[in-house]
Image (tube, rainbow over all chains, first blue to last red; front, side, top):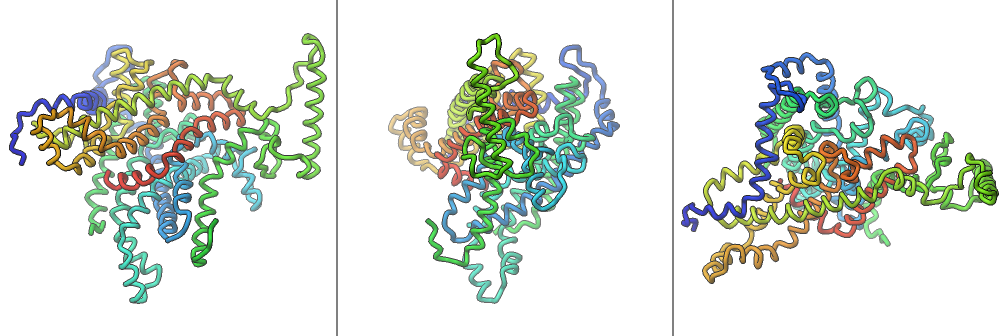
Length: 292
Length: 321
């Protein structure tokens, strides 16, 4: 009965606070930053129009490619690893076992804690001389390493810590997805003689695919924006810039070297990459998703 | 405790417990380290010692540990002897023996963490409560009214949820610096008073309320605002609480934005304070772990208190996003 056709400007009284703030701080800045990315500007002097100069400089900078590569490395390892581990944990939790609430709480604690505090803890765990990790590895007679100071190991160390931190979130979402799969399907499969692997392959995996797709999409977006742990654990981009990621790159350009136009060009390129990835997920991967 | 009515699940429990220890151990290690002296932390011994010296009787350990404990006792005696002398004759190289709260005291003296806490609590509570109020107003309008450009506005709101936060960092900083808000509470608070996610979340909930109720009430002369705060708000307390917890967590842990818009120590929030302390404390791991413990503990305690509500809502809203 939506006949009160549409002169209800009074509704805007209710919308006003949110609309004004969203427009001012979340919508207009996008257009503004696109405009500024065509200027050279340190915020103090006069902005100078350079056309696509910032972009061509960006694509000439080997450090930008390095940071792009590091970001892709981070995403390509952390996203599948986290999905794999959290799916296993969620499937374990999806059994009719006791103390399930306690387990969920425990796995979720790293998610609620702040990335900075957690980064400090792991800095200490990874410490070459006094760190827990090297002490544990010593039990298995593995030589100690300077994890965060070693160009080969710095990024894997950060990935490992990030997966640990974010695991619980994915576990909870997978668990909801698993609980939505009707139990009778498994019973029917068992009667037909399907083993556990077949049940997983032909029931769990396809019916869980909307959840997996959701987690994959948001984790990919999130991992392209990785910043805090890199900033806290490997100052100045790590050994041989091996942990320099794109957001850290543009943070440095803007707030340490005051090249705001240039940094915004980098931000815009990052945004386009994230957008392209999301579009690819949506158009290509989602075709493989099984929606009931 | 656990009665194993189903022994076939013992392997499942075993795996989950091993994983659980793995999730928790870093925090246990953090708390234990926060009560250790620099001596105990900077030991190159390969042995893994969880408990700090102050928490265990000396005789439980091997000869090497015993030696260390006696050395500690000797140090304590030396210190006492030194304290007995008049102040000007004291040897300043002799340090006081480690007291269990020393790391916490060191951290609190090095950085005004109490000030950071007050800032964080102030900003977090303001943003959480005001943004909830604003969001509920908008959600109410989206759920119950018909107004021009309704769909376009709703799409715009959903669109802002998909933008990467980092893309907004720099332009917002530029704008704030031009209007002179950098280094003020306004910069920490105002941009976050609107949350598209909260509007969306509450709208979904409001849509489940019976529309007839609204029509009946307005016919009976109840104004739209009266209906909002007499009917809609009381009914939506559970979802408001859930959202409130989300918002509280996000604001308590927010780091990059406050890092960029404030450099005045008096305005620092806890996460930024922690990051500064981490770069200045160097290898003083004891105080660092004490500071991390202080940052994490309020959240973990709050989480345990609100656990049931939170995990359940997390599960449902995660899917709707």
